[in-house]
Length: 236
Image (cartoon, rainbow, N blue to C red; front, top):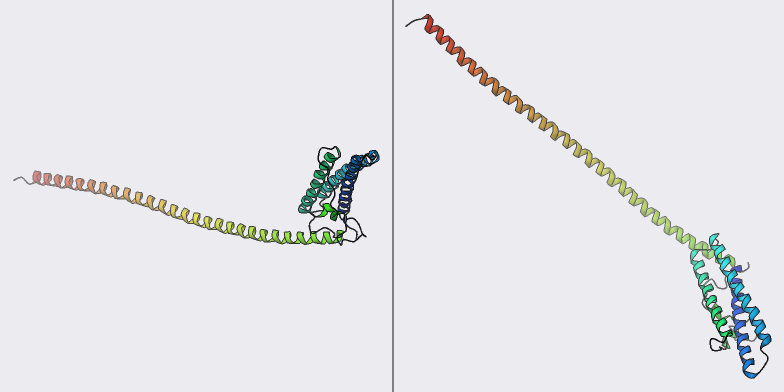
């Protein structure tokens, strides 16, 4: 299966950066030795325009892949860092082309393959910061992303279980509060009934006391009347 198209474009852009750096060094050498650097300058201008277009294309395709959820956010961040590095290198190259910074000579080791032999593609010094996805096929990257998604799903499942337990605990606490409120309501009703009964008994006691006092007075009056009648009927 072919490599990720975005990574292929990124690798090609890195090679273009290296090529421009080599041409700038050669142009400056020609200028120092009195050679004709006009042709190299024309080539450099075209290459730097192409470099700018490639970087813009990398940015656009990265945003499109992220918006369509074809890559994870972590991979998008990693690729954005790679693009930022290219932008920084582009500015350095432009400054060197204009003579604003000292000339630089590409390291000989950076121009040789990893094995040090004469055959094979030129090693790209700008790929040293790529992560473990470097060199993987699109299918392998997709499989790696699928594994990351599965790990994230497992973490989400564990979080959902914790939230479910917390929710159940909240329900249990709510039920307990409802039971306690019912008990408090029953106690309140009992206190209200007891208070009402006490007030009723108090009124009854007062009524009995009033009636007792009235009966006592009536008894005294009746006895007095009887005494008066007896005295009137039976004179001494």
